[in-house]
Length: 384
Ligand code: LRH
Ligand code: MN
Ligand code: MN
Image 1 (tube, protein in one colour):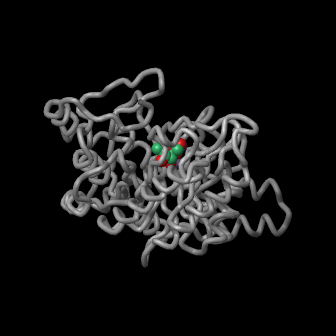
Image 2: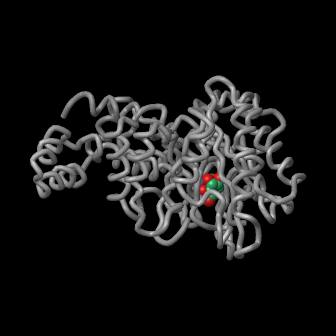
Image 3: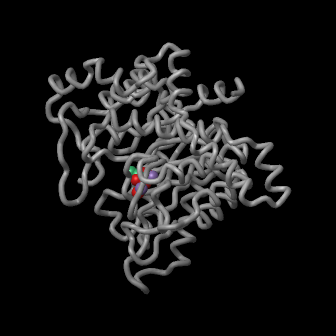
């Protein structure tokens, strides 16, 4: 195996979300877990454990206001002391009574102004924490035909996005996230990659699309979307998770590892395996423990990436050029069917890590310590 694959795998960076460490659930029940963080500082401490045992998860996404603190520079300093940094700032304009009929697309200009002020505040937080990425997801939409004017809502959205774009500084960008439905059930204002892409295209290079793998209709060919966006320079990153039905937010690679491999293959083949494309997790661990859930997810992404990097490009191109359908498919399947776990274990050993991050974490005693010392952990903010 080429040295190149090993180097590229070791260089991978996977971002974990602060909200994965807090309690979460469905609208039916949140099952509280022992030892969950009580504030953003403790969430960062848990995220640092994921990095400590995997070596490839050095940044943590924040969600505002779930992670509101008085001094963001201090939070970033705390992160640095733990060996991690602040990643994407996720804006949250969906949990306020004012947003019942939408945030930036709301028919009421007062509500729109309030939503925009929050988005701009998130850029201030980027300045304070050194984050280069703002992630925008809007719960905006309508439940009934005729409820509001679809085109007017697009105009309002475009206006807000333009204001945020203008506020972005050097080295900062925003990623616009789409989602087919939920909470809006009739017309969502950013329902698909095409809508997100069109808004981003109009604005310029600092606006890109983020693909949340749980945000599509069943059967959607996500890797096609990835290939297309990459080709247009508009793929900003991923919110990785798995789904069986809708936006399930299960562990990435758990429902359909083959799909994750196909996605990673398109990333690699399209030249997207760079710092430009952010590999972020957006998950909730309702049943399984949080930190090990994140470690497992990071490992799942690593395994899919290793398989994607193993695809024999020359053999594939030759089969494709010769119209050899079966051979071309076999080249991909050979890579997918390779057991890459020994390779990844070896790489971990090489960089001074335990080859088995799950076992090493279990042995560390961290879970027992937080379970004994943290009482009254915080809700992730999601699924309350
Ligand atoms: C919306 C979403 C978005 C939010 C997160 C908590 O479903 O994927 O990324 O910020 O969940
Ligand atoms: Mn998401
Ligand atoms: Mn989601």
